[in-house]
Amino acid sequence: PTPAPEARGGRAVPVAGRLTRDFGDAGAGGPARGLTYAAPAGARVVSPCGGRAVFSGPFRSYGQLLIVDCGGGYHFVLAGLDRLDAEAGSRLLAGEPVGVLGSGDSGNAGGRAMLYLELRRNGQPVDPKGWFRSRG
Image (cartoon, rainbow, N blue to C red; front, side, top):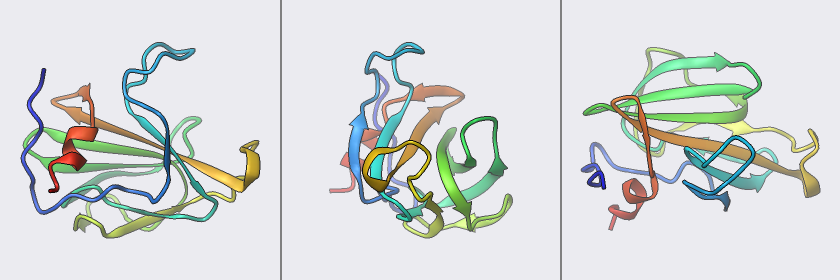
């Protein structure tokens, strides 16, 4: 197994929500390559690490998408945002607000919105839970 990455400038779980799909869970498209959180509509999303926004904008069917370069070959992909507050090229601190989730009216029951989170190491998806667990 890949060792958990060491902390770089702090770590922050990106949204106050409930984990609804775990890394590796079976699904229609094969095993999950990231984590899916259900959170209240309009929930604030924060950067999971200190680093630099390398992509910020709409992407295919994922809504607004943000990719944060955390250094050391690690990148976080955050998808499903309704609004982005971080521009590509901007420096980010761990826990810094980067956007908000949608209103939850796009078919999500109970006004809850979904945030998809993927951690990649040198382009390969890795389980992000170790990243957050080593916060202490």
